[in-house]
Image 1 (tube, one colour):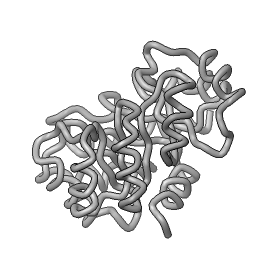
Image 2: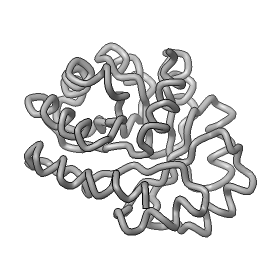
Image 3: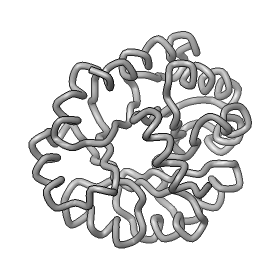
Image 4: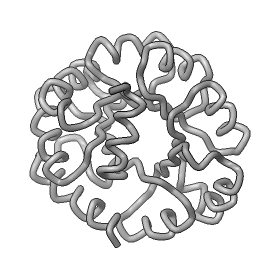
Length: 209
């Protein structure tokens, strides 16, 4: 199965991406297990976390057979290979960087770059993006997603990231969003695996509405 197919399959299972910014390698396995138990199937380790490649490796070893593991805040094409070497299969960025997207495609990994405007979205898609990350969603609205969905390809998943709560997911989904990236709402550095699982469950339940 390709990384792109894995991304789509995991989104079909659960339309949430856990963004575990600040996670440490020694806790990665336990946090990963807690997220899996809560129902989440995609986990992103931002590269501005402590020893991110070690955390990616430990997550891939612990839960990589049950979840798609990848990296976030990927700003340099050089880091794509390092993520792949660690066992990651997904590259997420806060911006639309064609060089990063092309490096991701060349490495056989799934690409989900950040975008905000239709121009950025189409640039990302042309470069080979598998999914689009609307970021920061605090500066957008469901109405914006609805308008963009009228022109964006329906087969490219659109994930809303930034400020999402379990109660706010409904309007985004109704507008055409395909899923969400969740950061501090489900994980903050220093929280236990039990806390993370408890915080993730309302989001998973919110998808069913």
